[in-house]
Amino acid sequence: MHQITIVSLKSLIAVLLALLVLCQVVVVPVIAAEMAERLPPLAYLQWPGVVAAAFFVLCLQAALVCVWRLLTLAREGIIFNIRAFAYVDVILGAIIAATLIVVATLGVLTTAGAASPSIALLCVLGIVIGAVLALLVVVMRGLLRQASQLESDLAEVV
Image (cartoon, rainbow, N blue to C red; front, side, top):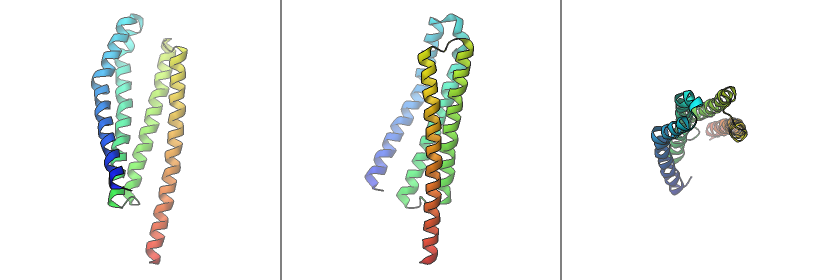
């Protein structure tokens, strides 16, 4: 992989991580407070919503840090190392956890009567996207395993 591509991706990941921290610390609590103010009967959902959003963003951050580490392995030319599988597994776990957070959020909002059709549709879309991403990572993990095995076999031949 070209050095400029890796540096560009790492720069964008750093910016994205900073923006996610800003969302986690400032934006989400402010929006939750405004919603609690606008809808007093649902104000009790303010802090559970902030916690769920913080954990959701934490899942995104964990996945991005693992992508960063995979880029480092690619730059060093050792992407087929056993360490790569651990990072891919963490990415998969983060996607599954984030999807479960969306499922739980949809359940809580539906139970509370706060899930408008558009919010429910967005949650269902998030669940489908999470499932697709998880399956995609499973396929990519299988490809990484095959490539690692081929490299190992080639090393034995040479």
